[in-house]
Amino acid sequence: MSLTLYARELRRGVLPFFVIAAILTMYIVSVVYMYDPKITENLSLFMSTMPDAFAAFGMSHAATTMTGFMLNYLYGFLFTWVPLLLIMMTVNRMVVRPIDRGSLACVLSSPVSRPRIAITLAAVMLTVLASMLALIIVAQLACAEALFPGELNRAELLRASVGLFCLWTFMAGLCFASACTFRDARAALWVGGGACLLMFLAKMAAQVGKGLEFLQDANPVTLFDPYGLAAMSGDAALDAAILAVVGLALLAVGAAVFCRRDFDV
Image: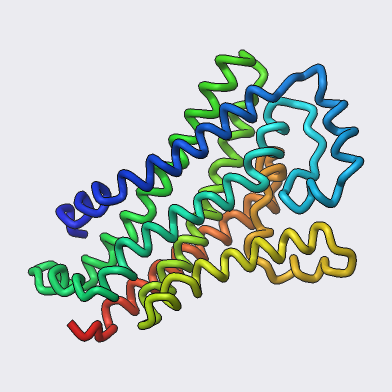
């Protein structure tokens, strides 16, 4: 790995990272502030009046605890969609745009070998995601403790967060492999990113459309089950591990393609 390239790419990604972090933090504060143990039953009744609408956004579970409330309103939708934007922006900045503009020539002409460059880019991606995960965990714990001391089950939240990182790793691997494979800039960015979006849309359709349940059977994103992870379900943990392994494998595939590809530089 090249520490110089690693540090440079992290510095270049500071602005989009903190923009996404600010958005997520704002929603975390809003969701935690909305929680009230006295009205959770009323919220459940309200959800029952529009079950399809809530199910489409991953909010179909009745929340009777602080942890359940946060899993329902943060992990079901927001924490899966918004980080995809960060992943796509990072891939575009590190791989797609340099290849399209020819600026990758400067990196490839350095003494650093292609395998080291590819490993460094993958490491940057994982570091960005790990940093984002740490930030949202701290934000959730701090807000919950400040507004509702003792209400949040930290162990359950942390288990769900580990599974969330596995999902992010899968999306990052798919986007990275796409960026390294396709020559057309739009295809390089959107084959991977678009595939992730289609998976989420298919999951939403399966949750609300009768007869569309089959869309979940071969959909990788449905392997992420924050409620099962919080409850220490072995099946949920195995599914999360599968997402992580596939994601790392896709990162490796992207790195291998990067090493062998002719970039015409």
